Length: 279
Image (cartoon, rainbow, N blue to C red; front, side):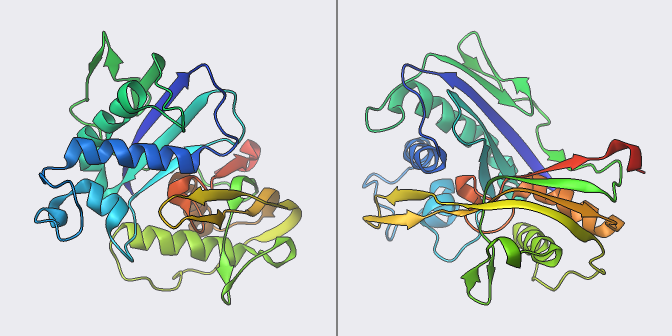
């Protein structure tokens, strides 16, 4: 899996919302349109350049699979988040980093359009904003490397996990390892532009402990003029006896997210390895 990671750390006069995903995605879209739009009318519908427009690809295409996601912790005192571009979208980094810079310094965040002067921008953990200048490294596309295999892990759901099964979202006692593995694998195949097939290896591993709760979360959709449900499962599960293929898929899930609405930052997982058992 190819990717590039942008990191933003910014401190302003106001504390960010508990869930920043909706605010950030909207603010990035506003800036990205300014950076990329070449249509004098500034109207997307029927635009002559839609097929080659990054903003249109990220925000306007219907029934498409977006090759990016926000990544953050809930309830932080200041803005501290990552933004991942995957596969072919990684090559669009210069446009996206320019949009983030515009978002922070010109357009602002929230209803008050709060701009930020005290911020750091990183590309793959390297500072890319030095002396008021953006600097993009020459080789910025990374490839996910999985060095060790750990059969016994704790899996932490850091933001709400929304997985549908039989047309409804799963709750605590219904979630099993197969649901997680298949969700990640399906997302991976879509990011790579491949036809989805069922996970081709045995799903081996046992959930021996669950400490999960359903977190209620909503966001306001300005476009649809309604309140959208973003709630899902949070907490930890303990998994023992994972085979190599399942562990590797979980590592992919750390990068690309799990379940629905990952572009907003949902479905963030973290693998806590028992290092003594890693191979």
